[in-house]
Length: 84
Image 1: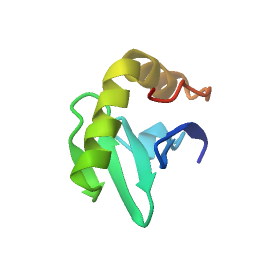
Image 2 (image 1 turned 180 degrees about the vertical axis):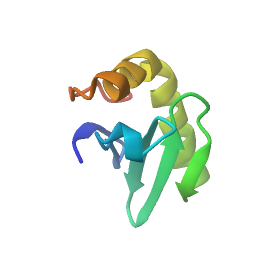
Image 3 (image 1 turned 135 degrees about the vertical axis):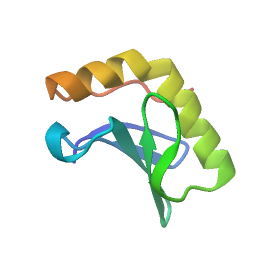
Image 4 (image 1 turned 90 degrees about the vertical axis):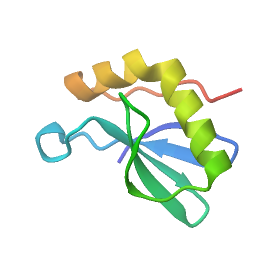
């Protein structure tokens, strides 16, 4: 699973098997916690993140939503800038 970005101890990854993993989402890992977060809505599909980490992930998704959705469709990985 390629790493798209790292910031504040959070690692963002994406699977590239669209047919098996809808709706479009990213996997956010923070310490021992992991959550699959839908790109379009920011809703946790599975797992858990502490509230502060989830807020950072949602902010990052909001800044990169178009790029993330394009990567999901094209199945082409590229790193994205971290949250600053």
